[in-house]
Image (tube, rainbow, N blue to C red; front, side, top):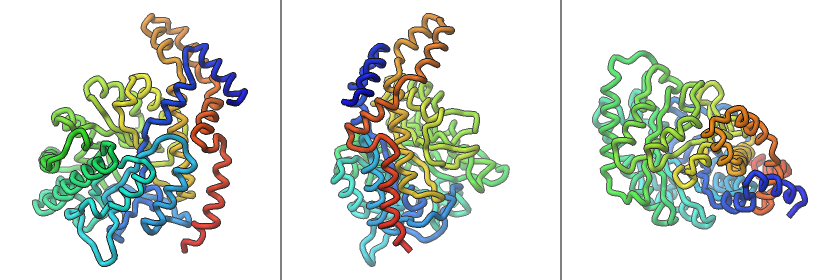
Length: 417
């Protein structure tokens, strides 16, 4: 134990915080790491462009082109980050044997067996996402809301297949699988009918969830969004729609992506509101700059506030946390590492804050003292606890991990021409 950590431990103890207990607990809080940062959301089941109102900017050398390269890159990122992880997959990352291919409505667990093996070898659970974008059968930009019955049927069957795959993931890993439904369906300009697409969306999700599954193993979620590129005027899966759907369907969780709201809205304020009504909720944690730009997560104010609210609400076992961003303008593995470490650091800082004493001041209406103590808490020696946490986890506490990235780029990424 370092002298600096001993000193920090004593300081936090004076505020009623046991940093040894924080470090031990944080090591076992799972965070789902998204596979799609490594290949710009390309996937392995099609060669077309990225669609659905999202885009990845940049063309930094060394993008993963095969499942083997993507897994190797994820391994490198995971080796440089502390804490417990889950693997987060999109259905478009199915892995087919040579000469084999099935469309998304026919996907089976066997098409993800290599991912299951990858996760089990690393003691990781798996979260899953049906992929309702980047596919020829997205008709006029629509999937589950399409007025064309055959189009809806195809995508409903895709969702059902993903339910079965999610169940398999949970059974194989022994960890519940969070299966998130998000669609980019919407319109570029003012629609003539707003309710019709939403009713079709409601009925489509209900049809997907009619597929049998164990609610203890599969945690279906519905994710909202304000708008996307090409669907600026209207999206069917609005916040009101998804929250109402989850509230009215047993076992369905609301999933909030903090890039999917108006710029002045913050998910940190929404977390305690939802926890008043939902037994569990799910998050996609990202960084939006002016819009849903999915920038690499950093330790900014909203990231810290989201972590604080999870901890303040005593909801570490009620909130499923997953990262969701993609940046192709910088080294993709470094982007993974920065984002994972930023969220881990935000969680550690939140768990080290003297929440009980601050809440007591609020309840006693001692608002002057509350402000003083909240500001004082910003200066507590979190970095020394972070360094100790990283040491316990066997990774660098400072930025020296970046030299591993430089070496990996020279020896591996630079040869991907």
